[in-house]
Length: 185
Image (cartoon, rainbow, N blue to C red; front, side, top):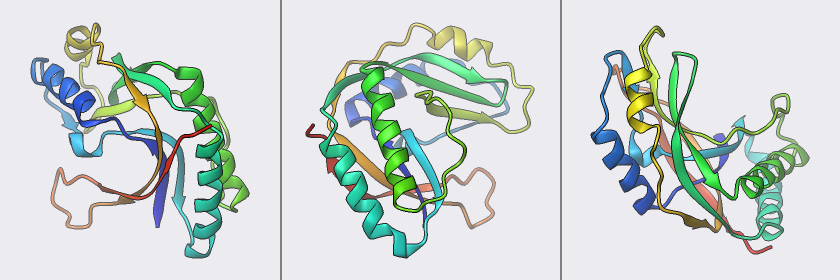
């Protein structure tokens, strides 16, 4: 199954972000992500064979047990070229990066082949461009000052990504939480 470790923002945080997005311009050529799928990916694992799952779960549970809860809030806006628009995070960024490192290490130690390691950049994807070339400046300007209300990150989640299969244009992946561990370090 296709998996990733994540921090899932609470409903209040996503409602604030949804309200800010509703008030912002919507340039043509962007495919907006659904609020139900908003998350901060910590470690993308791709296809994980079933025999690795018990060890992966145990190692993620240990990573969560070694990590204390920490404050986080949705913050500002950014982009990856002209292809993706995202909101960032503020607050316990060092703690979030540490949790990402621990989730990545847990997956590696469980035998999941991970991509080459790189510094974690916390972001929650809001929209993707269909073909690139979309002028994101109106969105960037409108959302630049966005500051969400802080919340306490207290859970490490393992999420299954169910890719679209219908062939319907605009269909989005469906996400299903298949494991969750309380941060208690």
